Length: 254
Image (tube, rainbow, N blue to C red):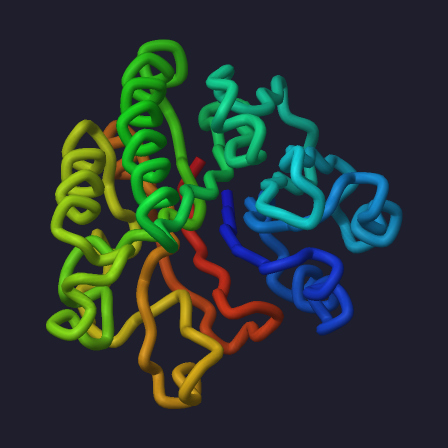
């Protein structure tokens, strides 16, 4: 089972940049999208179906042109859950989950901490999300949470850990939370198989960051520990350029 996660930074904009041709070539079984920035009626669902993904599940933010997540699948899931039931999270369209035989896949878009107010919101989300997942795992033990976590876990995951030590996304408190979240029963599938530095999934649009590979790894497929032996491949696709992020991939022997 090949699962991709991709923050597309606007699905309509990504489609104008060749996203659908790329999707057909990449050929995942399931793709988790974040920051779709559109409602379902604004998205060319028929074109996406024609690209091989007839099963499409969109969870948009109440605010127009903001946030939003989706899951596209080749096969029909047994069950789909929109949101977490936590009102302030769901108003921003940050979680959608599809349950398949043997594994459930969640698309997650964790808030960024762009200012003091949003940073406080981010920390509340992180705490509430941890509690939600702790309960969910009792019901759904085989879980893959693919998405934009807006946090670099370790120094190896960011191009300049010293200068960015006081920047949201690499704050000690954020990193400590992500470390604890992983240790609560997950595997960072990419780092499980790949220990090399300079592997990133997001680059600023400023200062020619992408061409210079001055990036951050803030997109993850976190896989529950009981699926550890089923992780066959995990990799990043930096050559896909429909967004300021790039896709990440995990392949499970399911």
